[in-house]
Image (tube, rainbow, N blue to C red; front, side, top):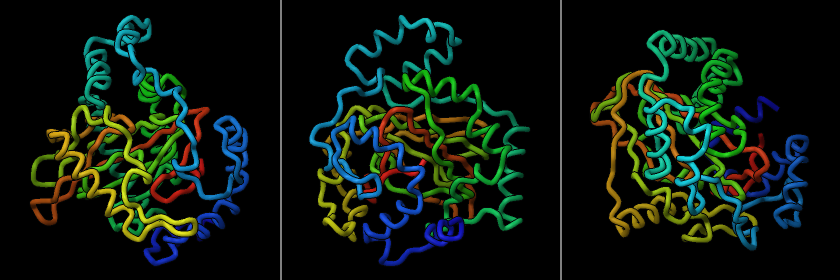
Length: 324
């Protein structure tokens, strides 16, 4: 099973476009998908838990969105006893999350913690336990290979407490991605990759593991873009069919996002970070990685994604249920 997973992570061929390939993988992971049956009934889905799954399968989206996204969410927040218990800087950061879709925790990890994490990733690579996936930029799920990464960073108790509060539900640690250089990824919302029903029950963290400036491909984002409507496969020319994923689906998605940014007049901001700084972002915040202006420069970082309990989790772009 592990061999198949690693092989498919590196595979770039045509089979990635056939939904049947994912169904086969789902069958191999049936024990993890079986609990979804209850959620399928809850959200009115009449299909197998191993079948392809996308937003088009929901006749309507459930209205039980995260509490801070609901009308009056900000007002509820400022009167919440848990909110008042946070220090002043954290309170201001949380308010920025509501208003602009992100918050920054400066110096969340100290230099020793950053060095320890970088050393651990280097060890996993040197030992051949970790490797880059088909993008040749991403090291997927290193937390599965390292109790240190899993417990001290991915499931950092202080961080999890904050995420639980922001989401109004307990978060489920889902995925980590390590980068040694900038992603150079075009603007996107994480909800095209990791989607939930009801919408919005995903949150991400981005941890700087070395200084980030304008030359090494900084993370960029569009403040306030989280309040735009979610752009999912039915909203652009995905080219999907009953049996296949459109060959240009993601390219067309990126074009649709670029057009949306221009149409809405969104302004780009950059996260020029120091090692140990952490950026949290909303499920629908538009963000990406700037081009690397200085060839050969590194931009070490760790991205973590978290789903929430009692919601249905899936991958819109590849039309498949999430295996948690």
